[in-house]
Length: 283
Image (cartoon, rainbow, N blue to C red; front, side, top):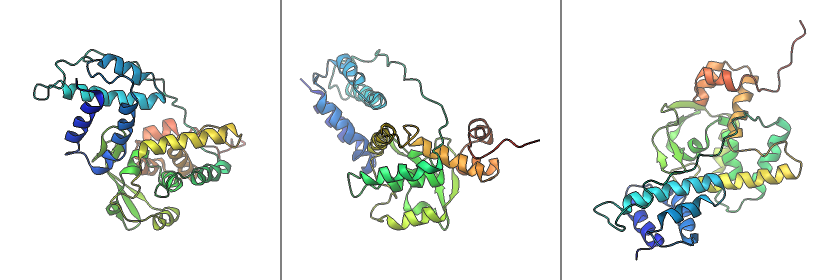
């Protein structure tokens, strides 16, 4: 009988030919742990395995793992693989994803430093500078996956070319969320951050993105429960904050949209009504 762990090991070995090394040391490492922890190892019990995975927390991670498991079964049941005679989860329906909170949250100026200090103070690995990763997002309004995908060669003088995305499920992708390249200016603070980082890897931030998000959520939960933050902030709130601050600085919406990789319509709809610095004029 082929076990779940054995099948995953073969699947991973075959995929490693086309995957970049950082994918194997980040996302696939997380899957290794989940597969090992699964109490159901009989590969024919696919539906029970999927049910167990989807009962775990955090919910977003369990859904990502479930998608990998579905890919594993499609591969294992292929005619030229035949680790299993048929795919037992071919008709398995994934539950609807939880409703996302679409609220645009801007981190107040008096809480920004607290957030960064919290990320700096609990660093688990000396090589993973979560505070620098987060502040780079805050200064550039780049998406989490875009920062993870940045390479040193993307820096051109005082600008950085944003043209890739590092997803949680597929690793490095040579396209952004909107499939458009853009140039983002590097301000003085970004340049200071870059000078502190070692250039031992082709990536500027060669960290485990899934671990970063988990770490970020834990630190923000601590701040919120301690009454030091008004919200349990999410990594994406760093981007929201940057875009809102640009608008407050009276940078034209078209320019903000170009830097953020959005359309002007999106900026007007989601950000121009949430800045906290404007006051109603007396007429």
